[in-house]
Structure formats: C-alpha cells, structure tokens
Length: 475
Ligand SMILES: Cc1cc2nc3c(=O)[nH]c(=O)nc-3n(C[C@H](O)[C@H](O)[C@H](O)COP(=O)(O)OP(=O)(O)OC[C@H]3O[C@@H](n4cnc5c(N)ncnc54)[C@H](O)[C@@H]3O)c2cc1C
Image (cartoon, rainbow, N blue to C red):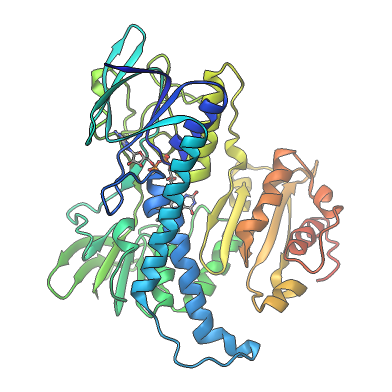
C-alpha cells in the first residue's frame, strides 16, 4: 500500500536533506529518498557533497597540507622532523572515515527530526488526485505519495567527448579522491575549483601536476587582482597551468594517458601522464527520475526548469540545488532547501544570490562575495577599491603564512560594499564577515569602525575596509 506524506524529497544531498529537515521542523510528514550506496552497499546520504565532493576533498586537502608542512615548513618553526613518510592507505582511510561520520550524522538527523528515509531510486510514477506517486526502487521497493515533491537529484561530472571516465586512468572527482598510488605525472583538464583543489592535493604528495584550461584567463570569475596573485603563487608551488588550450584527443594505454592539445600559440602539444583528472564542469542529474511520466519540464541544458522560487512546471513540485540553474554550491542548495520548505508552509523563503560566498580551498585559500572589479567596470558603476596585504598582518606573520590580501570594492557615492575578495590563510572563514555585512547592506566604513580582535587575520578585513577611504593604519 502506498505511504502518504506531505512532502517527499528525492535526493539527500545538501539540498535534499536540509529541505527534508526544515519541512519536518515546520510540522510536515516528510520522506526523503536517496540511492547513494556506501562501499558496503548501505545508505550513504549526503550526496555528492558528502561522498565525493566538499567533505572528502577537504579531508584530503587538510591531510596533504599537514604532509607538506611537516616536510617543508616545520623547520622554519624550529621543529626538526626526519623520515616524514606518506601512508597513502591511512591518508585515504581517514578521508573515508570522515565521509562516513557525515553519512551517519545525516541518518541521525533524519531520526531526530522524524524524517522517513528510503534507500533506493525515486522516480515519478504518476500524478494522482492527492499528489504525486513516487516509486522507490532498491532492496525494499515502496510506493510513496507526496502532496509536495522536492526534486534534489544533484549533478554528475561532465565527461570530455571521446574520453569516458574509467576511474582508473581518466578520473572524475570520484576517482580523483581515491587514487591508490601517487602518480609521478598527473594531468588535470579544467582549472576551476575542483581541478585546482584536486591538483593541489596530489602535487603536495609529490605528483608533477599539469593543468590544461580552455579559457584564456585564469580563474575568470575571480577578481582579476586576486586571480593574478593566485596564478603567481600556484606557479611558485610548482603547479603548471596552461591557459587557452584546445584538447584534440585523449588516448589511454597500459602506461597512462596521452592528451593531444593545441596550445594558446596554436602549436600542437602532447602531455603524457599516468592519470588524468577531468574537471570541466558538471551536468544536472535527472537520470531515473522519470520526469516524462508527469511532464516535468527540463530546460534546454537539461536542468529542471524552475522560477526564482524553485517552482517547477508542475503544481507542488519544486526543485533545488545542482539540478536547477545557479551556482553549483552546497550552501546554495541548502539555502534553496530551507526556502522551499518555508514556501510550502506558506512562509516567505528567501535566497539572496548576490551574497552567496565562493571559496576555493587551495593554499592560499581564495574566497569572495559580490561583484568583482571587472564586473563593476563592465557595468559602468562608479566604485572605490581598497586592499590590505596579509604581509602586514601580525597574526599572519605569527602563523608563517603571509601570502595574499583582502580587497573591498564599494559604491563610489554611498560606500555600500559591493564585493569583498580575499586570497590568503583561512579566508574561507573570514569571508563570512563580508557576507553578513553585505546582507545588512553595510558600507566599508561600517566594517572599518568595528573593533576586530588583535592579533587576528580578521584585522586584514578591517584594514582593507579602511583602505577604501585610503586610511590604513598598519600599511
Ligand atoms: C570534488 C568536489 C568538491 C566540491 N567542493 C565544494 C565545496 O567545497 N563547497 C561547496 O559549496 N560545494 C562544493 N562542491 C559542489 C557540491 O558538492 C554540490 O553543489 C552539492 O553537492 C549539490 O547538492 P545537491 O543536494 O543539489 O546534490 P547532490 O549533492 O549531488 O545530491 C544529490 C543526491 O540525490 C541522489 N539521487 C539522484 N537521483 C536520485 C533518484 N532518482 N532517486 C534517489 N536519489 C537520487 C544522489 O545519489 C545524491 O545523493 C564540490 C563538488 C565536487 C565534485
């Protein structure tokens, strides 16, 4: 017999599981369906983010940074270590444990909030009078009926035409997170967030990493001044990045992968590597959803078509996260999940796309919110800019990590903060202050007048705000 719910969520990634919890908090009966399997075949809620994305990549970034510090930087602090060795099996096992802790945490949260979890593939069967019938596949098939359905089925890695992922030689993010031996030479196609993060992990472990990028500009979405600094630092670290390339062919053999490409000067080149990570973007995942059964409309790029409130073409069917337009970020998916649950409850869900922070967890980290200087120039908006280097920040000196800067751009007339751009230590944490400020439509003077703890990296934020009025105190 069908089980009835007020809300059925398909997908338990950061979008889906958060939507389910918020809907349950609002008093709805909620089911959440997810098909991801752990290595043992059990449920592994958390989606791409928890299983093969944000969480495992950050676990490996942390471990690889420790390894690099032990080998290269401890001596500066007067700590002598010898015989530093990599235990790759433990390195990967720790990451797997972190992932499992997060999977288990979500299952606990479902129990705590009385969300019914179903492990298997959810697909639309039909629209019935009371709502939508969803068939759950897997070991224990079920039929659920939801008055409201939230589609949160996420995305998959985009493959290069003619170079399908085999996860042995040609790796998606999934394979890139479980390479079982440090390759001597590693290729990365795509100098975006994922390519740079994964390239950094394996470079720190000793791989010679070459990154090939089709676009002519490095980190085109990042403020140019910050991107320039990043390119300089990554080159110094030994990451080889070629821009403006055209990939002609990718072939594999027993030894590895050969990439034939045309460089930005038009010359034919080849790159021979043991493994190749392809990180050229992600495609929405609607496989198995059986969207046709109910006439759920997809857009021309395969995303579930939604309006600004995440309403789909069908009444009471919503879609959120990577499977819809907008930035493919876990926190954007979460915010949409909360907003949709609140809209179902007749409340005013809200997601402000202008204040979604972006972070690249390389070392140095890169983080930003709002508009870049080049965007403001293009829009013809009059602005003032101010920046402050971590080299002049006491805490950064004490940490031994003085790379980078904080930069503000503010409206020339009103001083409202229009964007904040950072490269440096722990800027993934520092960016929150800028997000809060922009949400409250603060001016750079507001930040400049706030007392920041000393010594702290956050003083660089205050000083960059002071720099907008050309009155830094420590630089
Ligand atoms: C290597 C990597 C690193 C990343 N790092 C970051 C980061 O640091 N910060 C950040 O914000 N973002 C990061 N992202 C992006 C982030 O992972 C995604 O934006 C986020 O996971 C999207 O959440 P979602 O809920 O929309 O979808 P997903 O997380 O993809 O979850 C979708 C879930 O739905 C399930 N599913 C799909 N179809 C069905 C079906 N028919 N029935 C049942 N279940 C189904 C899937 O199995 C999956 O569990 C990273 C991504 C990658 C690949």
